[in-house]
Amino acid sequence: MASAAAQGSTFGGPLNPPRESVVDRFLRYVRVETQSSETSTSRPSTSSQWTLANQLAEELRQLGAANVRVSEFCMVYATLPSNLPVSQANGIPTIGFLAHVDTSPAVTGANVNPIIHRDYRGGDIVLPADPAQVITMAQNPDLAKMIGDDIITTDGTTLLGSDDKSGVAAIMTLVDTLIANPQFQHGPIAIGFTSDEEIGAGIDNFDVEGFGADFAYTVDGGGLGELNSETWSARQATVTFHGKSVHPGTAKGVMVNAVYALADFLSSMPRDMLPETTEGRVGFVHPYAGVADVEESSIKVLLRDFEMTGLDAKEKLLRELAAATERKFAGVTVHVDVKENYKNMNEVLRHHPELIENAFEAARRAGVEPFIEPIRGGTDGSKLTFRGLPCPNIFTGGYNFHGKLEFNSRRGLEKTTETLVHLVQVFAERRQRPTGA
Ligand SMILES: [Zn+2]
Image (cartoon, rainbow, N blue to C red; front, side, top):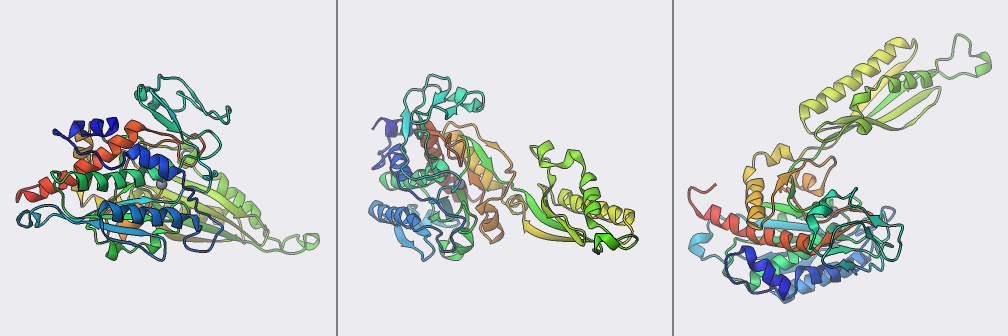
């Protein structure tokens, strides 16, 4: 197996190839339709997710993983015991790895027909079944770094499902590789495959305690090297303006039209603090849906920032702007109601710097240059982190999630897997030493 031999290159010794390469696994998994559904009320939201979940459980059993089970919520759990001598196993934490089996409802994920563009020579990639679908170098600058790689796309009619079957394939190949290579010493490992991630409905049914890990990595990220330990801290405000409605024919001196107060408030939003004018680490306020009515007008506003102080400042500003509007419109009263959505997982992860440090080390050993990128959104990991399972996110090599232009590559999948194989060894090495990091 050429790819397996290539995978051995950063391990400083001969490697027993896994039973199946990560690329072959990936190509097999993307052909299993697993879209979740936003409109369904059953859990999991679609019965198709059971197919892949049960298949993964069976494959884990065949590989020799322990405690394999599929929960009533379509979550797959398994463990791999430590292979260290008992005398050295003390103090080695249990590492969890998580990926989700469902794919986005945004674009159809049925009948996925993966296309391998072998030995990519540069240039735009036209998808064969729909020539209007083109992966351009202009919009995908990382393609320039992928010359000579085998790029994996769809035929242009579906999404690929790299999000997150890349993560699933990498974790399965990690298990396969560790069992085939007992010379790779590792502590206890917990494996979890989740359902309904894309509709934000699955993770509440994840059994953190039963999973049994001290911390975990979601393998659900972007291009090679990108690690995520930060999400937004997020609040949602509803600002309501109360007026007074009477028949317009007899309204003189009586009507108080709340629509104008709403308009005044919206026009006072600072232009440099909106999603359409911010990027990177800069947070925003985002009025996104509302009701304009004489008696009562209201607007919902998203507040986002990476820092709690920044989020507090945005909430304070919002309240000040609402109060200023209230002063301008006699007879109008304003109510501001704010609720917490989720918090930046870095509030917890910054107390566990070794999780990112060790991931950096593992990526470098795999020949990948790691970097940190904040996520301008929330993840399942942020919820798990605040439920007691610190959970940064690792790259998968994939790009253009949730669309027909989604792609990954042979190197992307292999280097992701290799990083995971190094990562469990880094933890074993560093925790074995009494003065370890
Ligand atoms: Zn995902």
